[in-house]
Structure formats: C-alpha cells, structure tokens
Length: 131
Image (cartoon, rainbow, N blue to C red; front, top):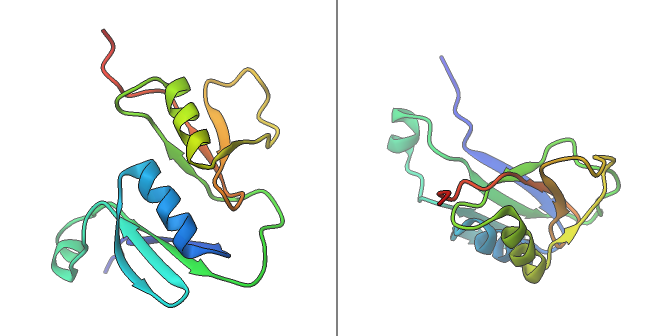
C-alpha cells in the first residue's frame, strides 16, 4: 500500500489572483476551477497516470477568511531555466512578488521572495545552460 503526492494546497484570500501569479511563474495552466478554488498544473492528472507513477503535483488555491500571520513552514523553491537568477528575480518582481527577509542573512546564494499574498518562496541558482 502506498500514497502519491498529488496536490499542494495553499490557503489564500484570492485564489484567482494567486493562481494567475503562479501560472506566470511556473508556466502552468488552470486545470480546474470551482467557487473559491483554482487548481493549476503542468499536466492534467488522470487516475491512471497517478496510479502508474509519481507525477508532478498540482497547486490548489483555496479561499479562506483568515490572513497569513507567520512565516510559512512549507515553501516552494523555484530555479530559473533560461536566464540568470537575477533576471528571474526581476521578472517575478514585475509579476507582483516582493523580496522578503525571513532571517536568511545576506550571504545566501538564493533569494527569498513572497507571492502577492505574502507566501514565501525561494529563487535558487539558475539551471540555464552556461556559455
């Protein structure tokens, strides 16, 4: 008997706005939507695919009334694939992210950011081919 990691759920005030932001960040598409909920992913999951092998999880944004109050205990890490880390940070700032300080210090090789609702995430080293 086993389980699969199928979704990561994010509580938020505005699922549509946050889903749109993360679709731009990750090049995901909306794959399901209902009142107060938006699911995005890089693929449309089927039961058969999930049962056959571990697939990338989707992100599900659920509307909740309460706001974020403390640093996330779970966060996403993203790695640019076709540009520098600095270029990706600039792009994400343009999409509505902010740089944030969670006590990481200035000597880190990653950048801590927050999405439009304040959820922290890290931008890691670039995976772009080096010339």
